[in-house]
Length: 579
Image 1: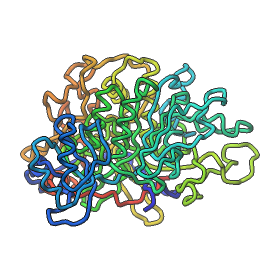
Image 2: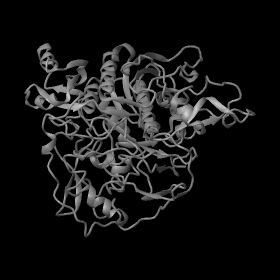
Image 3: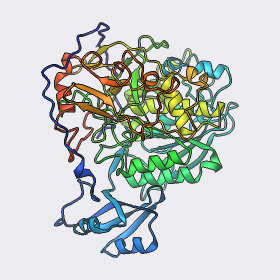
Image 4: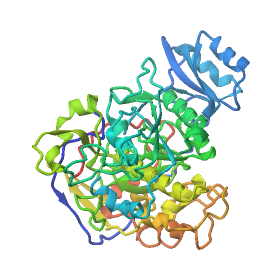
């Protein structure tokens, strides 16, 4: 299946800037189903006891497993395939009919299949005010960014400012049976270019347009987890996160970019991908994740709500949705991409995304001979687009892609700039600073019409669509506020629906420690007009839900897919991009 970030250019759009009436009267909202089914030791998508054949499973233990623990499981007609310290676990190959017995092992915390994951600038860079940062010397020098993706080709724009020495510090593959470290798919090279391409070493002569990344002097660590078809496994991603943690000091890895994802299958507290993300965060590494490309998905009648993918559903991670810059360097006309996934997250009801960044029709580094490039030649940029008097021929260096996979590295690059300027910042402080300084000026509603189908996608700008706002690199660099203490954790908060009042509010608990001070109060991080009614209600009858989305509301907050305990949510749509 074609990668959802790939697409042909579309045109035709309609934007409504006015205010529609907001009301919730008459909605049929039932009491939420409990998460009891998610608290056992076995994932719901494991085979039944009578199943035949072998299966690879990821087993998380309550503490680091001993050799006896591993031998006990492996002895049950199986074998250990890979150890995963990031989650106190390992990957085993077992007979499918033996998996159910693991539920009775008190040392085991959770068992899940080794699931498949997929990889979900000339205008985008100035849109987020990155060029101003460059003028003042902030370019990511010395900061290492681990790109966990489909590998990396040695593109010219990954060299230093003198175009002489590569800034690729390390490469390794975690794709089973394939040790090649280059990018056979074409996704990772493009993502890395958005983070750290310098836009100056490829075709230096006659350039009139530069495709520069957000942190063009950062070090790049490439950890390959996706094969030539753009797919990989949970275990490969977890192993790569383990390696990033191990190499943190050697290459000053301060940021991990995960432009990958898969459907949410269980609570983030059990999901092995999410648990690995949290371990990296606790090790001092900022983890930035793509929100997913399910914003057009109405297969469950939610109007694209509750489509955030894993591990973007983890409250520690910085989860990023996609904006479209509509082909101009100013941000005033930018709109949300119709395909950008929306919160709240399945099962845990976490407010996501955390913020949004440009992700539509992004031009970045091309990986020659990769499957994405070969299968989508229309996405190759013409040389005469950026080189004066050049012939109208395909560029060997630049390629166009769409998706939240392109938005996430914008934020990863911004995090690298913050850490270059102030190396003492913790991941918590980086996240809080990016969210507080994000621009919160949006229209109420915008629409996009896909010309091929004539379908119109209408989006409202609530916190489940744009989070805390639109990435603003320069404002973030100039913000000196700190979270109350370096250990304060700005978890993305949960929300709770009250059927008696028709309100959806942020959950106040000790686990959500934004605090009520002027600096980090909820009202300043998410805003008080577009996103909140007062300081606590985030989904009321006068703020963010229009009458056109009433059906979606009843499904999201009713006793159906979002609140159930056996959801299987697939990202089945193909994103063509919004132009």
